[in-house]
Amino acid sequence: MTYLFDVITWGREGNTVDGRLTSLIGRDARFHRGPEFALQLLMDAWFQGFGAGDIDAGTAKEFEECFELFLGKRVWIDGKGFVLDEHTKQPVEPKVNAYKAYEGQLDGSAGAWGKYTILTTKPRGEDFRRRTEAIIAAFRMEPEGDGEHADFSIEVTDPRYLAHMGRHASFETAFTGHLPR
Image 1: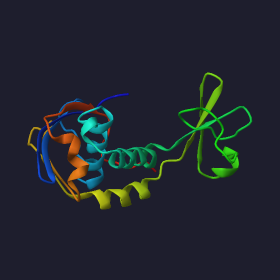
Image 2: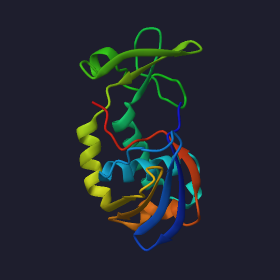
Image 3: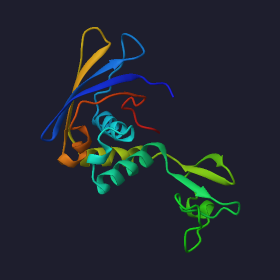
Image 4: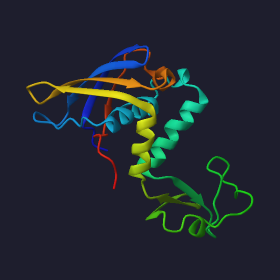
């Protein structure tokens, strides 16, 4: 994975977190100003473990769902094509044939993990955009003249989406703000 931005946050106040992006690819970086980038940054901070213990289980589940919308859902299957529980690797009950249940939704790739196969559904960019509208109240991005830095401010609709941003966070991200097609 190629990281594109270094992210640092200054902490949060109420429903808002402020920070700074630094391009890891040099000058003239393109800083996406759409609210989808704000949600991607919050998701990535959570995924990388920043304040993960401060987030409630329901919000963590929402971030997991956002990743599935953005990247596609992983579907574990056995040798006969039946869906397996991701954690136990036992067939879900009642048994479900993955190829029938996800017909038209699979992206065509498959991976292997031991004796199991992992299918992936297609990303759902428009669903991600709708989820963004429900979570991000406002997003401000102000690039500096050097093309290498930008300050940002993210305001969310509910402070629970920022529970993991209570302290300064510094991480790198490969997210760009663009949506999958």
